[in-house]
Image 1 (cartoon, rainbow, N blue to C red):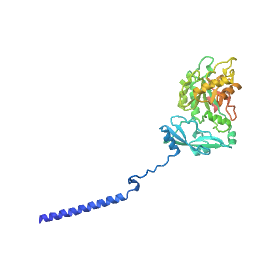
Image 2: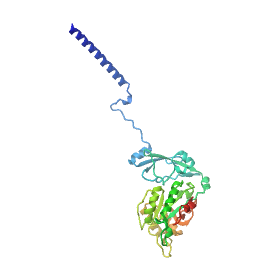
Image 3: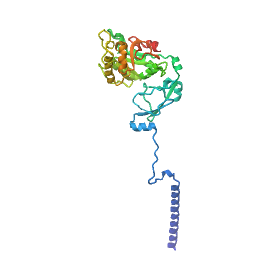
Image 4: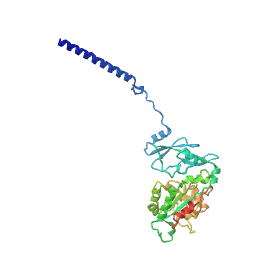
Length: 366
């Protein structure tokens, strides 16, 4: 009797276990049947690939973690993005042209482009800034009438040597040596009070009336690339992140750029010497001789754009030689400001000498 009861209990247990197994299998089958179709692997199924955007393709081709694809947006903007580097300043941003309109630059937002927000205007004075290796810049436009009415005057500051001595240097070149404390105060003023720093191609387009510039624009230059420029002034330029130009005499030195904020431009190759009449070689040589010298300088620096006349000496023959060598602009030492229509081969300057502090600069450039 006991053995029969045991057999019945075993049988019931087996039936109950079978029910549980059947229920679990049904639940598993139901769960399998309700999975999302795309999660079910299918042998031989084709993988659908979406085409890359032009910006993505540009980055893929570059295969560089520091690359940045810059898409340009607005009337007349190029359809294809530009490749820039995130460890550099913006390079070769196009200056657009349309009949009856004046280009007003590139901006970080469409709203800023519409109202010409100076702080949001981007050019070759600005470091490349990207998110996930991409960014957009928006085109601004104005009218020729508004551009002319603005009556913008652009100062080109001219420095030479620098000194850490507040009392200045002695000798006949004393005036050339700007006190570094004054220079630092001047550069801080420019960096913190809303000045715009045009590139040389922007200045050229501004002179032509093709590009508008903000009212408070300024260009910073140094003549001769003296060692004091490298030792004292460049650290100030770097700290303030200000675009500047060093006019180098390439027969004397050919140093690489000491900062991304320093452009190297020509002060001729070997014409910073007196000629037969006591004035600079540039007013003694023929146009062909001038062009040959400038070609050497241009090859060394890798750019033909603007030169600074040695001693400021120039004449029509000098201008001819400059143009013959493929340079578009030349800077003098004559006082004045660059305006629409200024002679590109006789750009004036605002000279900064020893003893000219921040107040002197503000009187000249605001």
